[in-house]
Image 1: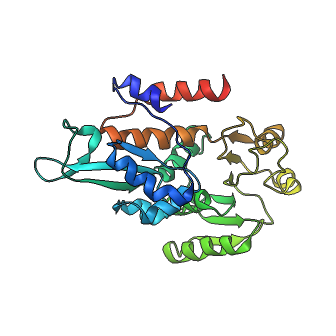
Image 2: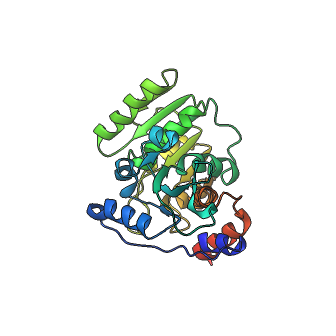
Length: 277
């Protein structure tokens, strides 16, 4: 996806994957900065760890509590910090790492464009999971003015943590733990259940069959249709997987690195080809 975007922009760059142990994350970030990398993407379990490892944290990333995109910056002739990808020189006196989060807005783009949710304001949402992705989604949905949020997680402590944070930042929104007795507008799976074919459903199947929410969204994008989405589709519910979120968080990261609009169509085509052939 990213290499397709770079090719469409005519940039002589390459996007590569590196397997880094969490214990070496700080060294990896510093090493990439020294070697002249344009930037980095981070995935689990690095997103929350990186908050304390970058030189500057974007305010939104601070709110969401996670960094998934790092932009290496240098000073321009006027003294402003600008992305390395927008500078002409390959040598700089000083370079800093700036952490961003592109996941939060990507969740909204995916829900609206891929799932067809017209307006989130006032909706009731059942959120499965309480990890970093779930927390980011919960806080961003709260900003959009959803009416009620139900949190379901295997360990109650993490769900309580999210509920407490939402109570402070969005006191007008209802937050409850556990399954509601009635249906909801939207179900979001932010757990890893579904990545493997033998995984159990991340939701109570009887509740899903009985209450039939309007929309079901799974952040997982491989497999292309998880057991949750297949079950929901068979019930006649509207579904979407995590491809849209992956696309839009990646497109925003590319814009941060290049300072140019992302070629979303080229990136989307490459992503779809990779995920579903």
